[in-house]
Image (tube, rainbow, N blue to C red; front, top):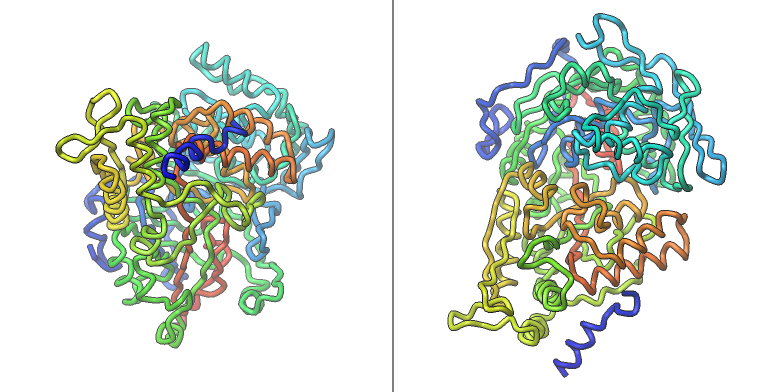
Length: 615
């Protein structure tokens, strides 16, 4: 019976081939004596202005839209810079709306041509890079910013957003690779500037997600003068974010504290969103409608890596808005509801299932675990079957996650709630699979490679309590197979840097939606996206062929069929083990008005208010 199940598994899919409180930094954060980043032109917010005290659960990496790929830095980028489009604050499912654009794009030529008009009178925050002149935003700034993503020197992880799509853009990048310099003054046929405020984008083929891509923060407008004044040796401006958004960076101590202040050049926004049948939405509209935004003058962010530090700061009223990750859930929640004693104090809970997948990947370029040979496939499949996803959800996240069967999570276009993965928790079958393919146990009980060499898997995780617990559960899985596991903890920014370079052997990697379409998740495993978002650095021809074909299709049965085939291919070759989507529980103090966690927007600070009289 076991032999038959092994053969079945192998044939599967062949058919589709400081504890510190607010007054002091956490003892677990970066060195509080680290040098501050000098921010030019700081404006003092008068005493009495509204201040929101927020917390990040991991350190930021920097604030250059073309380079940043972590959620926490992206929250800052999203309020300092602006994209042409954004999302309606209250609409569910998420709805794209204009931000700096006058209206939604005019689409012609069967979806291959997008004409977009920019609002006039939008200005960058004043900076010495502008030579003392008031600097208006134009469409040329967006074209320049899109070109930056393709500058080989910059090595942006966001090339995939436009790669193979815009007429002439890939060719300009190839020329830059040969000459060693990207020509920013050269005309790109796909970016036709009709005038200062009108851009016509010419695509090689229809792209049904372009409006959502133009709402994603890597496509934010960055001024060329700022880049040329402040860029480092790699062309990055991570420490000098000068944008047109509602906030500006006023103070920054790396890995410890970020202070944002309202941008006096920001044109302002009148809060004018519509509520549906949800009573909470109706209450938000009643409290916020007609207000001039932003109402909050300063956002003071501390980085606190440890759960207990964040919890103590919140209950001591030193934090206004905090993410309540799974390990802390029992302190505030009972069966997904706020505990009565906290509700009685006016504490607010906004709870959603994140549009994310958390998955474990194995580096397909690694000589031990990677590759497409049968014995390597068998090794990864056995490990995938030995891992108990439900146990991780229970122990690490206190039940605050839902197991996933499909690479596209709930709430995202293309999700299939009826899909069932062929990968199941089955340690007995996993061991039999390893036995069949020559991974023999030695006298010490540990397995070797089929050629007799030692077999050790290195698992990398964040240097916080969650990362430690995840490593412990993975070690339990490897122990059940007789495979040595070597732990490797790193700060979050270091993990991101190493995996982009394909230097990590294995890691649990969460991905939250950049935009609400299945394409944003299926691209994670696409070969050409290696060194961008393909963290496992896998290149599977059968998968890549289908992904390329799916790019030409709108949402519908034909694209869904390809997605199903791609999911089965992932199960067969096992470059990843899909695990779960977590609940995001956001707690707000009683004085916070209008907060509702958005599934796509990273930062809601522009849309909320503070009641200064409420303590």
